[in-house]
Image (tube, rainbow, N blue to C red; front, side, top):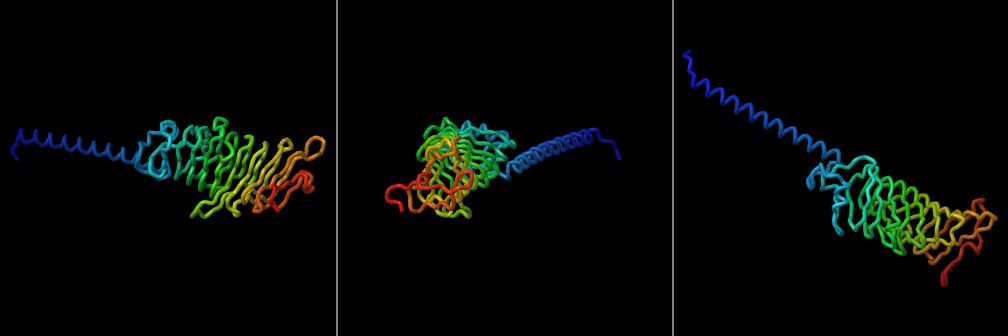
Length: 273
């Protein structure tokens, strides 16, 4: 056919436009795949903040009273990270990826979370409170802070709890609609404190009381399967288990040698039978 220079130049321009358009589509597709990968890496969360924001940054920048919903926000959550929560915020609905949460501000709540390695009620919490609600099994709870109405646990299994704050109260609560009940598998009591419950189906399963502890108070509907009280160096028992409610249940109480505790070691409040 007859060569047409003008037509050939036009075809070349059209080809270049098509190539540029294809390249732009490929870039947009790649960015979309990256966003999808980030979303899946954070437990399938979509929407909300960008995946370039970490959970630590989100916590640090949150305002008191705010909720961080991992089911709606796309956040970068590294495995085994440590977080400090210094304000009254709620972190909920997601995979913590074996994280440690240190609570230093009163009013913080962990709700509907899984894969929490440990929770630390920090000394900075003072007489403040924190709540752990409907979370999956937590390996460790360290109570180094809190007051007389402080540590609230519902529908969550704590494998190991250590109490180091004088006169703190740990209460196991009923969670309406939850399929599981709160329980503390192993509790190491190192100071005078109160173990409480508003639900008889919750349990403090194994409670080990150090020899230096003056008194452990059992209140409400506290259900204790085993209490083991350590002896002093001279072989005597200096700790008192004090019962303040007729609804308290102690299935077994003994010293480290297996001898049952007598009336001097288990006392009851006035009016308790």
